[in-house]
Amino acid sequence: MTGPPTFELGEEQLAVARRARGRGLCPECFGRLLGRWGHGLSNPERAERLAAGLATALPEAGDACPVCGGIFGRLGLWAERAERAAAPYEWHRFTCGSRWEPERLAAEEGLWAELGSAWGESARAAFNRELGKLLEARTGGSGGPDRPDLVLLADLAVGRVEVTVSPLYVRGRYRKLDRTLPQTRWPCRRCQGRGCVHCQGTGRTYPTSVEELIAAPFVAASQAEGTRFHGMGREDIDARMLGRGRPFVLELLRPKRRTIDVAALAADLGPEAAGRVEVEGMVPAEAADVLRVKEASPEKSYRVGVEGKVPLGKVKEALSVAVGRTIAQRTPARVAHRRSDRVRARRIVDARLVEGAEGRFTVELRTEAGTYVKEWVEGDGGRTEPSLASLVGVPLKVGFLDVLEVHDAEVG
Image (cartoon, rainbow, N blue to C red; front, side, top):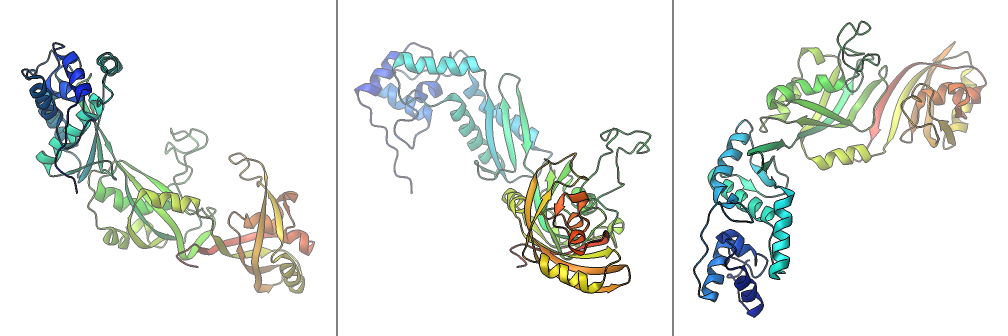
């Protein structure tokens, strides 16, 4: 609990004030010469104490102040500008910032050095604080740096307030039942999203994605300007994501509305998503959840349909050899154009034959994070060693791939 104000003036402090007399400083800037001395007083109140200590008149406010140029006298105007700039958005918490001319801030520091003040408070810090206090009083919002909905930046030279809108986050798990859907938007590689003959002017390789199908109702409800999708890894386009689904965080960019019914929106993604994407466990999230999802490296379970003329007994034998064995996987040829070319050590945690017939069989696997399952089955031209194909001694081809589970902390 904060105690009573303290502002005991010694000869050093009074000497600074004495040297500042006649410089034309406004009360705010006069008090800020000792802005970090004592506590519990505003800078104009400090100025009053200094004037009393010197038995002199308090400086008058005005646009002629050589330090701030009268900016502190126009705080009410800046508060009005901030309210107008923030008006399109729903917000509850905010923080204030300001952009000053560097020459003015440098001149202020030069003045402190000239007057011998070791306790000066920056004009920028004082302006940001006082503007925040005024906005709190006018709007009922909560000012401070802790998770603001809006950042209001007063550009003092230009005369306007810039607004940075913090993203809105929701998280959950998705199941992908459609083997034609990418996880995120996939711009056309030929035109980089601009639209060309190859993509029929759409700018897309695929018409839609898991991200867009999930995001659609949330974008509409929040009036967001866009999205970012953060998945705990990703499956291939032609692979299904089953089980409890893959954890993800949806980031809604520059939302105008922050109060949304997450559960209701998740319950009805719309007709375009029906039979293709499902979600569960959708709840509000925070920026820290993005880091948690992106840094996680859980094991995963798969069901793989394999084509190849090999006796099932030989498949079982090969699987028993593969379990627990380290494999060396060079970056697959299919992704080498967008990932660094290096060799990664991975491990097959568990593997079993589920069923089989002539020329085909199905296996279920549990692998370490980052294992390229298709390449482990087929060998990728020798880039994965040992592969299942090399262990059985015949060429193999993946017919289908399903992700059965992502074994993150929530699942085990």
